[in-house]
Image (cartoon, rainbow over all chains, first blue to last red; front, side, top):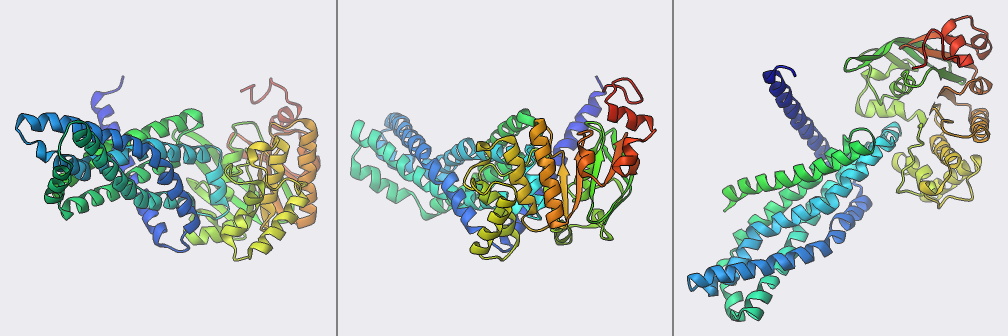
Length: 256
Length: 248
């Protein structure tokens, strides 16, 4: 056992170093993203992988999130005789918070982990070295398309999550518990403002960046062997999920 | 010509290269031999700028690779082809797309011209009948061939081979060596082959350098190396477990 102060210092230094490294990685990704040629076909392929292939899990989680919101919201609001506000409660919860956060977490779990593992395996099997040896920049070829696709896909998935979640709440609140359909939607229309939707959109955009940036970074610098890739994948999902939740708090504090 | 001058590299506490000095002549096959884990692959990665030395120079036609970054480094890298130890074929691409990859990414050639050149290289390595297979569907020898075709596709001036025959049976080993020799005769590139296949490597190399304990202990023709009195080389060639270097 070394000096505890030394251990703390070493850990802090390591974390600061990693943060700096991640910032440089993001800067490099941003630079390559604006430098031609644009890898249009790879971006489309990644939108398919991150966006289209995540849509079924988004539909499923959105429906049940909306339904549970409808259920809990109804029982809570009934205590105050405000069942009529179920629509706005479900709508605002989803549009401001749950939609962007849940969509980002689902993308991190499905596409983020797969991206980290894919790039990690390419790292340990020297495929990334091979790319560099061919004078092809691996950040441009592998990372930029995923990050751009994340920026496009996550807001779209969030929009799907919001709409499906609202209908999930409608199903429970209106069809099962007897809130009026007109009340559900008209109150929602009255209370949900454009700024709520814009805030949710900005959140999802930043979450798309966080998830793809963290997951590609972890894969890109994966350690040796299967254990290294496994560790990188776990860290990618955990760190991106934590960052999404922490960043969500700060965005909420600033936006709403 | 490639020149390594007093090349040093450490990983944390472990010093892997302790002042490597080596001249790799143009147009010849140079073998770098040495024990497993002795830093041969690290040395090879310095030749193409995949690793940066702590100190020393890597001169490729007079340009110090260790000082280059970005596009300037890419320009030098375009002189190279590399056959990695594990082949490093892109597993999500077919054999054809793997071989065509450098042409698609680094040239302005039309798709027709790319297809023509790719098929020529696949024919040269005997894989013309399986361009649509994925790397996972190929045997070890076929993967080596596909990786060699990819390394050759841009007609590089220098090709680096990182243990090209590791893990292959004796027949495939000779077949890959024959392939390297044939390709060298046909395309005339400078070849650097990292290997510990003794004595087979002496059949294809024109010069041999022995890397031991982070330095080049001898660099000469295969004939001289084979008859060297240096006890480290003698032990390596004969494979004796008791000698200067010990079993591990």
